[in-house]
Image (cartoon, rainbow, N blue to C red; front, top):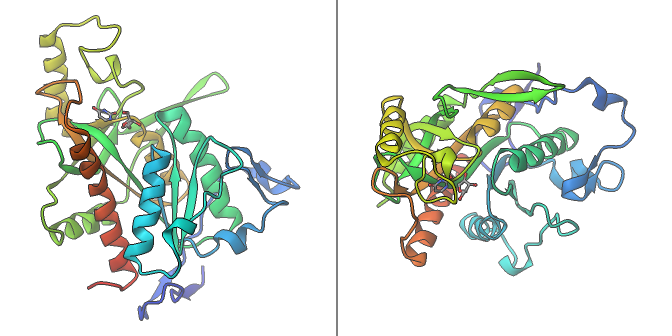
Length: 314
Ligand code: R2B
Ligand code: URA
């Protein structure tokens, strides 16, 4: 592959680097006359995707539509871009499934809760990056989680995304058969993020494994759901086993996010703040304002990373 000069981000970065394209792994796509990204209300015939999205270098995804709009407004200010934050429009306004905001080289997209929801979004987002001929894209999931042995408010950078059996893999059922995919994330990106965290005051940060479950209640060993078939001791035994396996937080999307990015050659990282310490309870009873501040912490970290990459800070 021919080397390219990375000169599209207003930096004086003059190293020649290998260009990294987005690989879709579907031979059928080439023979399709049109690709409709249904849940985004976008398509290859109705929209000029290279013109709209070709300069994207950072994609940030998170569960809530409001949070991803706030992130877009925040990053707009942080990058010192011209114009009013009130004018940042939802590109997916034609559908209420996901929200998407573009701010310079940053795309901010909501993905809802859980593996099925984020997985649909990722299929269409990866195809979008492919159709738009984007290069050298970094992806971040910025979210919330339950901490395992960490103080609430700690930001966890994921080392390995693991399933409920603490395995670094994602199981996808395809045509009645189980396909197992690796959930390997980009080590360099995680280390760079950890370095960034040391440059931001008052940002408690840890690196550790993130367990992804298919449920918030029984699946995460909570005693406070509508159903519960285990004792407090059994819950704590499971959480201690998780801790011993290196798990430091629990959420609901990281394994499929890591697996799909890995297959498609996308550098990805997961950065989630912990809202509580699961050794101490299950209910999230922290005041609303405190939770709002916690939720901004992954945004601060990723924004710092982006500004450094763009040469806006040292
Ligand atoms: C974290 O928070 C949500 C559940 O409250 C879920 O989307 C996740 O991964
Ligand atoms: N999100 C989760 O999935 N679990 C928690 O405990 C908190 C947020």
